[in-house]
Image (cartoon, rainbow, N blue to C red; front, side):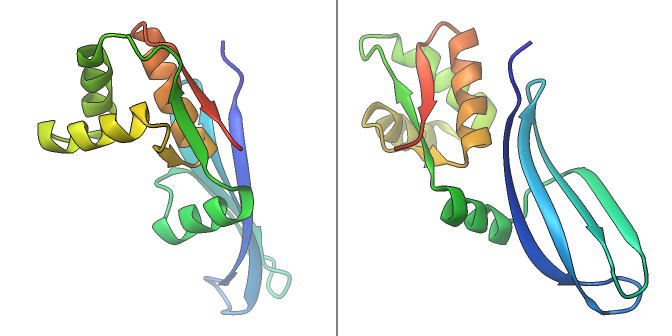
Length: 139
């Protein structure tokens, strides 16, 4: 089994029970081939505890992760690999069409495709399983 890849971010939100400001901890992870967003919090004012697991990563918190941790970049280490395989995996995993995948392919081959470390490592693992030598790196 491959090692989990995890990044976390702290943020404030109102308590769902009493409205007091509470601190939440969000964790974006790649575990067992699945991307996850898990959030935990506990209100000091009323004691309400929350744990939401397996949610979709909210865009504003994805932006915070990128700001706090920096983006990871997808690199294909063998530029002579079969581009059709690379395009097939990218289309399937990103849910994009042929026009969009050509643009993403250009970014990948130029070393310019980036995202959170769990997102980019997810794609790198899918590509490696398809026979493409790919890695997620952070400068």
